[in-house]
Amino acid sequence: MTSNSEGKELVIKREIHAPRELVFKAWSEAEHLKSWWGPKGFEISVKHLDFRPGGFFHYRMQAPDGSQMWGKFLYQEIKAPEKIVWFNCFSDEEGNIVRAPFSDLIPLEIRNEVTLIDNYGTTTMTICSRPNNATEEERSFFEGMFESMEQGFGGTFDQLDQYLSER
Image 1 (cartoon, rainbow, N blue to C red):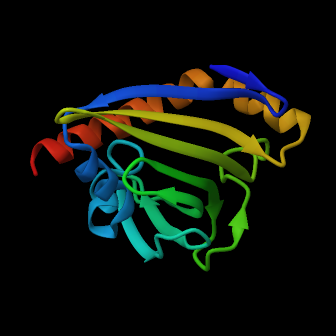
Image 2 (cartoon, rainbow, N blue to C red):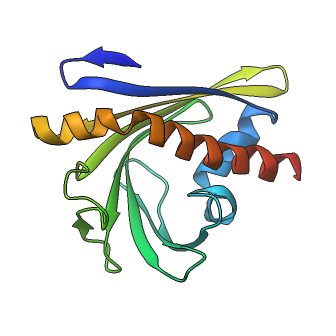
């Protein structure tokens, strides 16, 4: 966890047992993303992926109980194969940014930056997340969710590691 003028930032570092170029592809191609992104047990359907600065990834997450949520990445910066910066948002089916279905205090936009460092066949992946244009109440709520987000990202990154080990 680090701090800046926008409040505290969630920082998670993970060793992925795959080459950096493959890890980057897993983040940048629809066929890969739908196979590992999201909470454990959820099915991801890709509605749209335009992987470029100014482009977006629009997807549906379906829980085992059949309930659905929509999400969207708004890509800001891409430096292949080492860095991706995007805003992550909840959305509706049409792609409009909406509040999280489970809390009005989740910031509308979370800025994420993932960096990939080559370690001779494995990849050190670091993700840094912080609210963007959030109120003080939203920032405080976001910071209070760090433990839960670490668990959520941990499960997602377990899925990434498993998926890439099968490639």
